[in-house]
Amino acid sequence: MANRSDTSDIWIVDDDRGVRFVLAEALRDAGLSVREFEDTASVRGALRDATPALLITDVRMPGEGGLALVDELHTRQIGPVIVMSAYTDVATTAAAYRAGAVDYLAKPFDLDQAIAAVQRALADKPHAHAPVPAPSAPSHALLGESAPMREVFRLIGRVAASDLNVLITGETGTGKELVARALHEESARRGKPFVALNTAAIPSELLESELFGHEAGAFTGATRRVAGRFEQAEGGTLFLDEIGDMPLILQTRLLRVLAGGEFYRVGGRELIRCNVRIVAATHQDLDARVAAGLFRADLKHRLDVVRIELPALRQRRSDIALLAQHFLASAAQELKLPPKRFSKSALKALAQRDFPGNVRELENLCRRLAVIASGTEILPADLGKSVEGPSGDWTDALRDWADRALMQGEADIHTRAREALDRVLLEAALAAHNDHRQHAAAALGVGRNTLTRKLGASRTRRKS
Ligand SMILES: Nc1ncnc2c1ncn2[C@@H]1O[C@H](COP(=O)(O)OP(=O)(O)OP(=O)(O)O)[C@@H](O)[C@H]1O
Image (cartoon, helix red, strand yellow):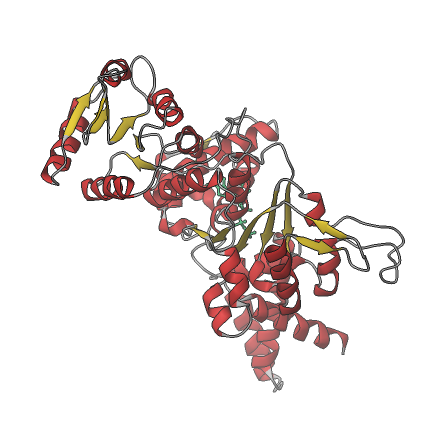
């Protein structure tokens, strides 16, 4: 191609004239020169005698889709390329980055944001990453159409193909583990193990051997060699949930492994090399824990290379209807029950709830409704009273009890009533969450330490 010339033009490819026009005008206003194309065929024609300084393309267009073009430009080292699409699911976003895009704009986008992305891409060196084969079928099903979730999907797509450590933050039940799985499934490590470990659920004295394994005879009861989670995850991804609760001594050990890429099993002498991507998650404010001396700053830096913040469900109410309908349908299918649907007003009522247990709480509610709601249409009355707070029956009963106790001149009425209240709430929450203290605490709206303290107090009292 002797007469081909590199230009400083930005090429825009979109079958939607309106998008092309608005974007082109904004870029021209920013002092850039622009060429417009309505399909990839005309881009291919133009590529015979010119190359763009940067190409921005839509994904789904009549004829060939935009990603094939991204792939080709990446292979020929022409670019950079920015992808823009109304499809913001993880699979499409990740496919764009896999094909070699340097950025992804979710339509409709803010023009300032688009110009900033263009300037960033022009200033950056072209990204070079190994091509990652496309997944056959994603096993994660992260749903959401709200702006904050679109941003989460974009980030997942962007970092999945890299080996960077990721820290996922968010309240309990916001989908942290699902995001970790999506990162794994969309990466080249897919096909290798995804291993999850909840650091808070394991007694600290067992955590070390859980992570790194042990040799026979390493401690009482260690009758044979056992591989730890690091070895089980070899080549794949290790998801460390509730990392904020990891005891300091293990933080030191973990840091050493992350820095050196090798470790010993407990009681072992053989140095084991590991190739594992770490995705960590916490519902706590890790910076505050660092400031309080409870979490090592250097470990935080290692884990917090990319941060994905999952919003609470009440911060993305527009996703509630979508999620609820999905959970209701899949519960019916799984439990082989006749399908039901939500009435419009029921969906509206759901969207107004706060869901302290986030997506998990909504999922549990929908599963319950799939089983117990009487008609095929679920009405607001079927949703129960979970948000209105305690009222009626039990406060009447409490009043009767207080009247009687006062008449009989009993002592410590307040303390006894509070103990009974704590006990009932704790037992109910623990039963509802399979004895998982963290989840029970979140469901009650108290901290885990508070719950543990109250649990201890209530058990001691019952023994005495
Ligand atoms: N965006 C989503 N789309 C579909 N399902 C979701 C989504 N987010 C969460 N879920 C579902 O909600 C439940 C809770 O999600 P997950 O276990 O990933 O939350 P988590 O933040 O890791 O919770 P915890 O902090 O308590 O460990 C799971 O059953 C998960 O499949």
